[in-house]
Length: 312
Ligand SMILES: Nc1ncnc2c1ncn2[C@@H]1O[C@H](COP(=O)(O)OP(=O)(O)OP(=O)(O)O)[C@@H](O)[C@H]1O
Ligand SMILES: [Mg+2]
Image 1 (tube, rainbow, N blue to C red):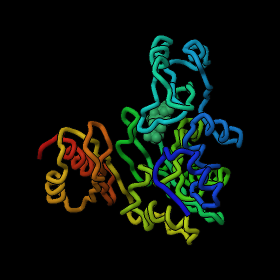
Image 2: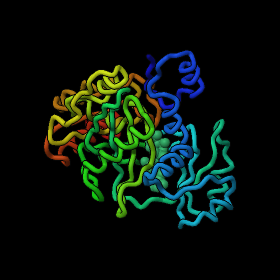
Image 3: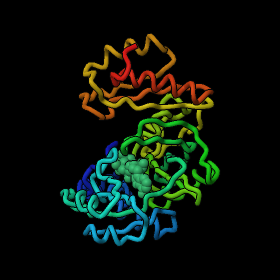
Image 4: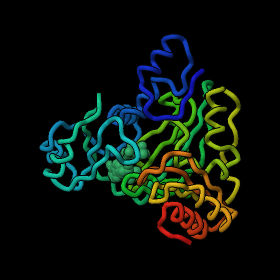
């Protein structure tokens, strides 16, 4: 059995393993929909799930003709992450400028309506080969320039109940036959939930679960692919917040680490050991407790220190 924790494992490798009789989770039949946003939108819409208005386009004139108001969202169907591959364009000229860039291999241009959301939420699901599945409670994710900067867990959607959001994510996992973790990124709008995208792996929006849930998304991913009984996804405390550490001017994060731990021993700090580059996700901070505002203040303070924004 093979599993992996990376979005862009080439589908051909997964298919070749499957052809050799190796169980690969997630399998190629499901994984294609996490790797190709156009295939994902088509498949989910066909199955009756709510997606934004969208269309494949080849020219900026087609973007102009796409019948939604500016700004519109241009996307590369494949190869994107952390907002790379997503452009918000205000005019035909801006669309033409974006589309003068090369698309990656096998990718097409997509135009989408700019969804007017109240908040972005995500729901994580773990699903095993014999079909057992559990959902984590919905969380609120905050993106700046296409990068997730913070997560509050749990967070009730405004348009539907948490149970309905969980049912939607469980329904997608079942429909696509996902094995392992699935993260469903959603727009919470006046008209209900609309699906943004899917990730078939432990996901940034679920990192809070390492300390914040009875079973972390990493443990449940392994339990799921092994076809073991799944662990309890419920939160251990009223609220968890997770703030990402993005690369800043400080190259050696370990000096900052000691300072942050000494200042606020209640925080849980994760550094990924990656080379620090500007804006790259290099770690995260989690705080558990009751008061969302207080937890956010503490976790943001720590992230700001790592990012060189503050020095005390
Ligand atoms: N149609 C849309 N309307 C409004 N905002 C959008 C739309 N599509 C994307 N966005 C914004 O851009 C962000 C990044 O988009 P998306 O999740 O498609 O990109 P990505 O680079 O694949 O992200 P990830 O890092 O999650 O893989 C979204 O979280 C959202 O804030
Ligand atoms: Mg996304």
